[in-house]
Amino acid sequence: ASGRVHIWSAETLDLLQTLDMHSQQITSMRWNSAATELAVATYANGRSTVSLFQNCATNRSSTPARQTKLSDHATVPLDSTAILKLPINEERVTAISLSPHQLAISTDSSLKIMEVMRGGNSGRNARSLAAENDDAGTVVAGTAVRVSSPRTIPLPSSAAFLDHSPSGDRLAAAYFSVRLVRVIDTATGDVQHDINGPRAVACVRFSPNGRLLAMVGYESRVYLCSAASGHRLLILNGASSPVGSIGFTPRVIFDRTGRRIATNDWQGRITIWQAEPR
Image (cartoon, rainbow, N blue to C red; front, side):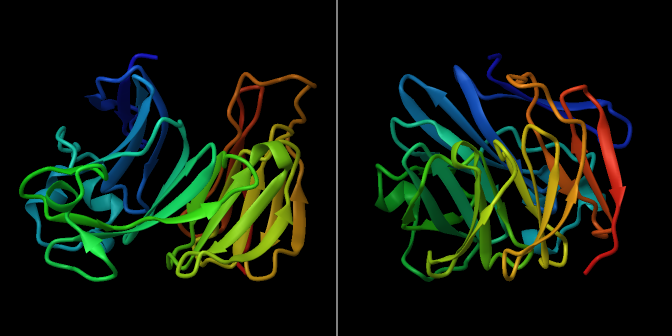
């Protein structure tokens, strides 16, 4: 409700930065895998906007974003001026995923996937949002960020969480209300497969090698599935929440090696499992 984004160090828990979004509500946010860019969705005056921020080191460097690493810029603040502001529509944004070359945005009615091109790159119907499409968005002068026209994909319901595969060729979407995880080919928009998820599935993640999917709902039970086939391989039992417990947001994540999986539960605990990558 404050309209601000607070960023802490994961190592020291020190507050590193606060971004004032000047908005009534922040509905979703997402780092890219290198933690060099942050996408933030806001809702104000009946309209949603997605803003893209880049850290100062990346802005000053000619190194492509996909080659920078979290360890290089873990304590480098974000530039407080967004490099991209993308008005969506009157609907709230429910989930975002940001890969090196794509931005995926879910609203109440659809999923939009668009290519993101930086620097001098062009192609695939790329547009300068500021110069060529006043309704599409605003690019800050000098940032040389372009996006393609969005590919719109119908949804069974609004997605609670989105996650790109490490290569960016697939997108996993968790649908809270229908207990479903859908894997989508990002090049074509085709559905590769649907997976029955845990009750009230609220988060889904690809493993670092892209072979596994971990998903979790309000029971804190982690389903591990094959990303290629959708077949369920294992269920990890966490702390089941009582009926009606909604005071937390279930999340699951792999560590960088793929050997550990962490999730939270309604009791405020973090559970970590040891796993061998497949």
